[in-house]
Length: 305
Length: 156
Image 1 (cartoon, rainbow over the protein chains, first blue to last red):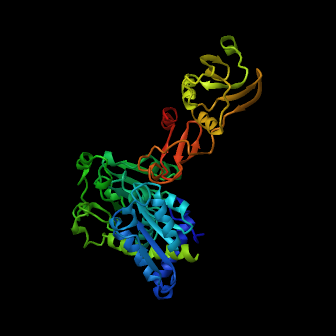
Image 2: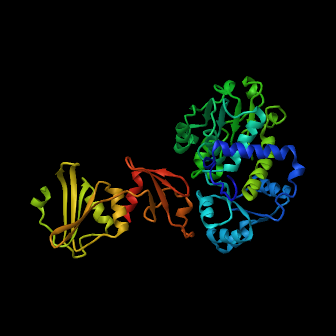
Image 3: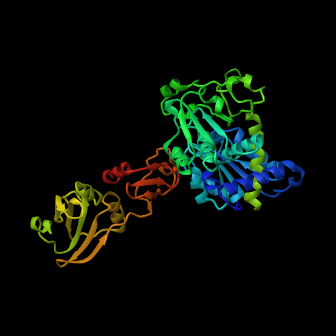
């Protein structure tokens, strides 16, 4: 089901496949010692053509915890890319060195293109505004871990739904499940793209686009907050219009359900106030921690089946 | 047929019939025919058609189409039929077919798509999601778009 497989979009995976991934993650979490050394002899390549800390380190940590090794393209200014090598050649080179290649790129479709070139499986670690499938996998797993289920819950996805790939991928991921309702909360300028809405419609998921968090907050079981993606705005003046549109504070969450969880793909800037961190609602650091386990499970399934 | 009353038969060449009304000039552009090439070209626009209501017809003497030209015509004139004429007789008649995938003909409309990166040896691949209305999806970046992309074909 997973062996040798590329991971390009969350929509490439069925619900059954995601359940298999989550069960594998459960097994690893319950008996980590059993998996130590599991990927000994395997090499993962991280090829990040765009700044990243968390995702890159998360994949590298996942590989190291399973006894494998990693190679990293490093800072672009110090790599062959700075000498003018194109993406296709860089991928060809990494393909001959590594057993699995993790790619991040500012251009959309880069991971799919890399998968066409490389024989080794390619994992998309984010391409432009579009996909970040492993983030969506770990987001679903976090919900399942906190709530015991993914179906039947009411979700609010807040922030930059237009340019943010983590938000888009999470919404697409929800279309694989049966949420009770999904509220898409954003300024008009940052509404979700048509293809994302169509995925919800095709799946028959009930959703509503709103601008105001307060009016829907009491209904939510999960609040997924995202950063407004300054770097993806074609026009800086447009960014200035929407920056700081939402700031989630502990006080603002007073009207929420007792067991609401707040998630965020991180890094955050100012959209979640630090006073939320110490509340039991704060799930974003747990989310990042679980992300390593989900990626461990994914790498094991891809490399060993 | 009505057009025969307007334009005489050609001896050898291609007749592109059932072009949606108003698209004949686009068909000529796709074929790179400006009129200065020296070949005889007949253009009939907005004639009555039982099938289409109104249609355009293009007749080109001593010119036959390459498969990629037929694919391009299929995109902007999906109702077109192509008749090959030899010695005043139609020896072959085919309908154009919009392919399931368009390879190397149309560019993705998304400027952030890897397939638009000038430094990469990537051939654009566009899947046809629906034929009527035309809905296309880039195989690389998943961007969806419609007929607006076809203006590329006639501006090339």
